Length: 147
Length: 232
Image (cartoon, rainbow over all chains, first blue to last red; front, side, top):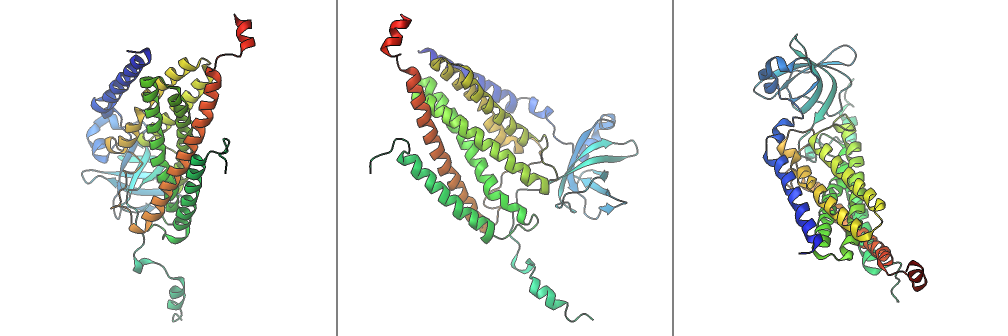
C-alpha cells in the first residue's frame, strides 16, 4: 500500500473517532446552550449566581412593560415557569407565545434578571393569508365615516 | 471560434447560467414573493442565506471528496481541485456568516451568539482558512498535498455536526425548514437562487482548479537544462 493511502486511512480513522466521541458519548450532554425553566426548577442552588441562559416560550398574557426599557414577562416550557425582568429594548419579533433565550442570573428573590434578550423563532415561514394583507386604500376609506 | 485558454468554455457557461438564475430568483424573491407574516421584509434575506448554506455544505463535501481522492490516487489533479474547493468553501462560509448576522440582528436581536449551530459553522470556516494558510507555508508540492488532504478530512468531521447541531442541542438557530414549513410562494425564488449559487460555485471551482493545476504543473516540472547543470 502506498504511503499516501496509509495517510488516507489514518485521517479517516481520526475523523471517525472524533465524530463518534462528539456524537455518541456523554460529551454532547455537557454542551448546554440554555437551561429550560424546568432545568432551573430542578437545579437547586446551582441555578443561582452564575451567568446562564434561560430558554423557553413567553407565556401568553405575561408581558408587562415597565418604566423606560424595563420589561417583565414569564418564560415557560409548560412544566415550569420562570419570571424574567429584562432591561434592554426587545427585538421587533418579541411577542407573547414566541421563543426567547435570555442571558443573565437567577436571583434569590425568585426572578431571572436579564440584560440580553434574544428571540428564537421556529422553522416556519408563512405568507400572510389573503384576508390579512393590509390594504392602505381600504384603511383610509374605513376612517372616512369617523366624525 | 477557437478555444481561449484564459476563458474556458465550461466554467464560463456555468457562471453565466448561475448569474441568470440568481438575477431571476432574486427578482422574484425581492419583488414578487410576499413578505413573511411575522418577520416582514427582513425574511427576504432567506433567498440568499439558505441557498448559500446548502452550497457551502456542498463545497465542503467537494473538498472532502477531493482530499480523499488525492490520498487514494496520488494524482495532483485532485490536489488542484482540493485547493479550489477549500477557497470556494471559505468564501461561501464567510458570506454565510455575514448574511446570518444581518438576518439575526433584526429577528433575534443580536448579531451573533455562541449557539451550537453558529459556533460549529465558525469552527469549520476557521479550519478552512487555516488549511489555506497551511498551503502557503509548505513549498514541497507532495508534502503540501498530503498535509492539506489529511487536514481537510479531519476538518470535514465538523460538517455533520453543523447539520445536526440544531437537532442534538437546544439552540438559538431554528431547525431545518422543509417545503411543508415554508409557504409555497417562497419556494420558486429559493430554488432558483439555490441552483444559481450551485452553478456559479461550480464555475468558480472549475476555473480555480484550472489555475491551481497550471501552477502545480510548473512546480512539478523538472528544472530547465541550465539550472539542472548548476544544481548538479
